[in-house]
Length: 223
Image (cartoon, rainbow, N blue to C red; front, side, top):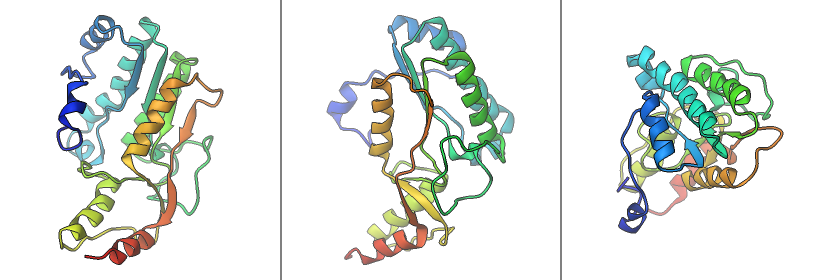
């Protein structure tokens, strides 16, 4: 966190180490800290899924179930959590925005777990859960802390040129959504402050630009 936050920021945060699969500990933290709202972001991404698919699927599916169950038992006012564009049809990107109500056709265990979580949230927390899909098509979190996934590829293409190194970006002809990590975080905070909507799930896509066009923007920046 020190790569992203100042000492003043860190002084306002209490870090409690735990495991999203440890339901008893999770419930005890919710109770002892009088938690009213949860922003749930815990997930295992694609590279780690390939290494240990059983554990990764437990984190991505059972983990969200544990959060929902703790929220249900303690009658929390709101659970905001990140789903993914991976719930939709296969493919790295499309040439336009995906509708919030588009049908789910997940192509792998990550998307399947997110789709499961969306259905589960409707069933267990119909009036209190609000779903954000920060990856509509193939959105990029432009943040230095990204270590894997599409967001890492695109961030690296900006960070490497900044230090005089060549950056390589796949999917040059795809149109993707670009959203800065601060804006994604702001969306989650705003969602916490508002009542559950009738729709319940929203794609947060940022600005749609072809990858090649964004690479062109980077090349135009003076060295």
